Length: 159
Image 1 (cartoon, helix red, strand yellow):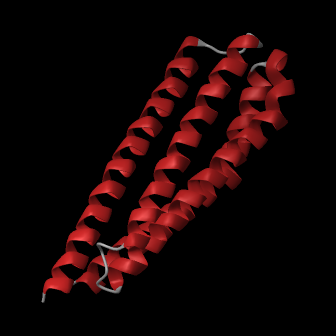
Image 2 (image 1 turned 45 degrees about the vertical axis):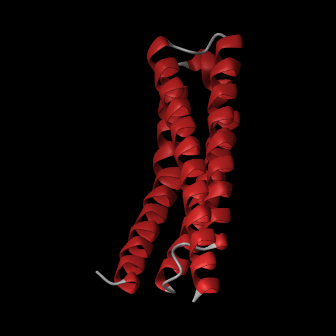
């Protein structure tokens, strides 16, 4: 498969992921939040703070998608091992770490206000853990892409 084909597939997946995220953050999340507020009236005061929290997570997700889009563009230019891609993966790593911190802060907040059930707490901790794994893997990928870029630069100088 050519680089341009890989780039097109990755861009298509990125667009579909963005569209699914838009549907989730604009339709599914508000409906679920209203349903939960109706089922638990004692926690109804968390409706708008929870929506803002969810949309904040959405902003981080879209920042990650934007960085990934930049990687796809470089792949399409047949420039997979570039300093730009290494920087993009480093930014993705930092954003994923930020998202893990945001999820963990949500766990702490809900625990402090006594609105954290065991199942939801486990779910949120699992998501925070997945974000940490994504941060570590993105950092490793950034390092590998940068080292490959340096090796390519050295090989071009020796020719």
